[in-house]
Picture 1 (tube, helix red, strand yellow):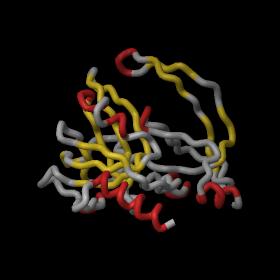
Picture 2: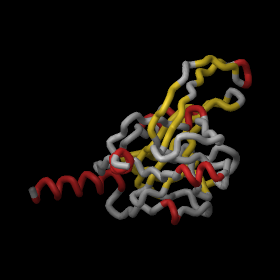
Picture 3: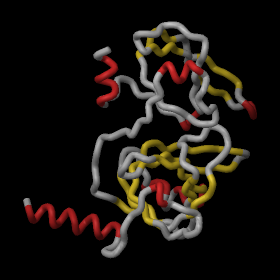
Picture 4: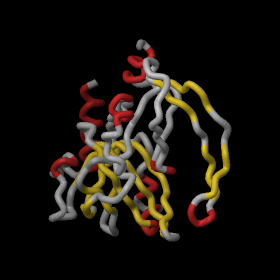
Length: 217
C-alpha cells in the first residue's frame, strides 16, 4: 500500500512539475498568464458565433468554485481534446479575461482563455462530485435571479410534450422539447426556464445526494 501511495504521488508530481503549486480560481488575476490550476471538467461544447468555432468549458477547482474557459479552434485538437467531461486535469499558462455578456455559465469575475503556450496534463485525482449550485423553486419563481447567469435546478418531470423543430437565427434548425418540472410541493406557476443551447445539460435520475434527498420529500 505504501509503495502504491508513493507511486501515485510521483505520478501527480510528474504531471505538474516538482516545484509547482496549483492555485484556486479565487486567486486568479489577469496580471500574469503563467498560472497553474487543477480542474475538473464539468461540461464541454462547441460554439459557433459568426462562423467562428470555439470549444467552451465549465471547470471546477478542488473547492467546487467554477469558471468558464474558452479554446479557439486552432488549439482544440492539441489542447481542448484533453479536457474530457468528468476528468481532472492540470492547466497551465493561459490568459485571464473578464467574463461578461448574457447566458454566463458561472458567476466568476474572470474566464480562462487558452493560448499557444497553454499546456494540459493529466491528473490522477478522481471523484464523482458534480459541483451543482442548485436554485430552489421559490427563488426561481420570485423572478429575482439575474437573467444573465445560468442556474442549476432539480425537479420531478410532471409532463413532457412532443419534440418540435424550430427555426433559429441564421436559418439553423433546432429541436425543442417542453416539459414541466415540479418540486413535488408546487405544481403550477407562470414563470419558465429554458436551456442555453449546448451550454446546458440535462441529467435523468442522477446518482447524487441532492437527488436522493429530493426523492424523500
